[in-house]
Image 1 (cartoon, rainbow, N blue to C red):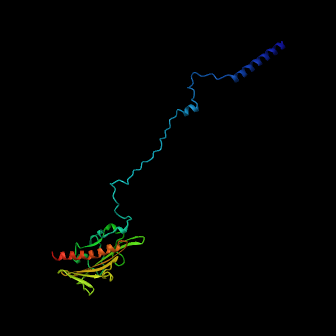
Image 2 (cartoon, rainbow, N blue to C red):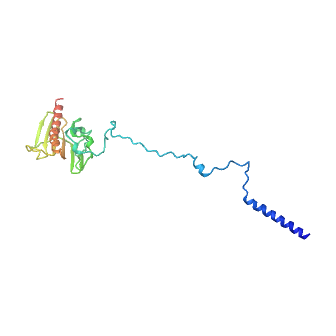
Image 3 (cartoon, rainbow, N blue to C red):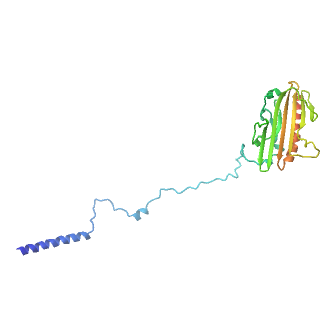
Length: 249
């Protein structure tokens, strides 16, 4: 009986071993209720669409031939050698050109010369303006070894101007104009200079006041002699013409 039980126990153990070994080689049974099989990584990569847009290159327009652009007006670099006599235009004293009076001076209104103009470089060339230590308003420009400087001083005093022997005097009745050449070399015959200096005194007989206009101009440029020579003549002639016209009114 014992022998029979031992044989039966051995047979049961063998069956259990066979079932266990068979379980390792068996493939998993598909679950009909599960989701669709996952797609492999290789298959996924081939179906993904990039969401990043390609980089855009900005289009730069060519404005070099655009006729609508104009030169900038204001503080900018320029070639001062381009200044010519045509750039000397009328500037009204007391309006375009500031009158910086001192304690000894009367106000510009006492001169009785409203509307009087002087030839001066265009305002676009005024790279520096205002009163310096001597009361001048001026324009000055420097470009390496070339320079331009124009200075103008206006004073109004009480009384009549006393001209000396170095002055040329022009009598226009209500106005007496005295012109003194402050550059001793400018009067030499046949000599052209790149600088000019004048002191013009205008006496208003009716108001018993006189106005002095002192000019100093210089151009150390290639065309300086030509421009200053023409300017020297035009500056005085322009003031004299205005005073003669006033006397005829």
